[in-house]
Length: 423
Ligand code: PMP
Image (tube, rainbow, N blue to C red; front, side):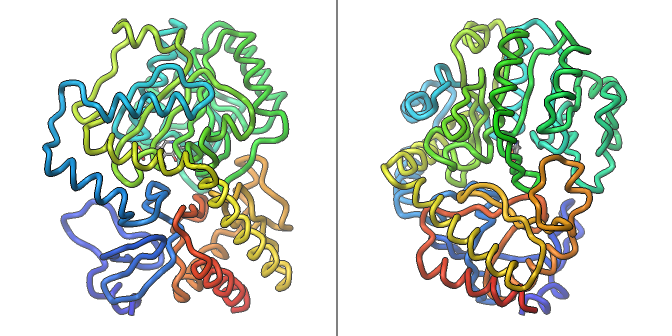
């Protein structure tokens, strides 16, 4: 039915974005981990609104709380109780969070964290890693996806290739380093001694195949940043509150100076935050560094975030998400192995990706991704779609697992995976 739909309403002359491969999907309702399209087809959803709907869709607690706010009024511009409670809760859950500032999207919160780091250090340069994605701000939109025009060599950081239309000067302050490479990191830190405000990374590279940090690599970042007075920023837009109540910093036991949150934070509504050490956030708190936004932590979004975090903070909730995902990871590994298909299933249970590397070994760096079989991912995804399993359309992003995924959903997914590999 979706194939015929693609011919019917595949695009609009008014909308500037296009529907993703292999054809546009128009979803009309959702409940728990399931979503339904206009033709009545049902899918187990592992895109989850790009990972935001961590509780699944139309969660009753969320619906009730948000309806109450809509009835009471959504005034903002003055202080509101949900944002205060939310800031307290974030500091309770996240090891390194002492002060919090809110924003509307991951991109904005990253920009706020970068600004806080620049304000605190009085320096301007930022070191980021190849293939790590930090949103569509002009400075950090160098996402280095395979085949993207902005992908470029790390050896010439000053010659950072620009996205089309971005003038050179703007991205000149960004130094790009290969991931999981201690030698290159030290060389770049030395080359830019005294100039770097921040080092920013995705602790698990959710936007490039869920590449994991090599053992000790995050500790190395922590040590080097501390020794050089550089602010370490973890972009936890994907990992935050999902890989466990304390996110990646609790998972890996490495506390950054600042961390950025969105997605699971809002439970499906647009809200983001950056949070971190008091001394780094203090210039912002004092107003010496500015950051603002009309809708930041509006009562509706802050309430959604409170419900989402309170749910995720209950004992056993993120553990179950992780276990559900690990069951899928194992089933995919087994099915691929049985069919002799080289496939690396990488990440953690709550977020993982199936990566078709040449010999099934996990990716360590962005350059490994250049040799993965993207066509195979898309074919696999298409077979899953036909069997009622919805995964992301951009092979390098990940499967996100909902807190409300059921045993039936997981059984159906395991079965579909086995079949899809058999085609
Ligand atoms: N950082 C990371 C790690 C992300 O995954 C994303 C979004 N996928 C962003 C930043 C940007 O967030 P947003 O799309 O909400 O601006």
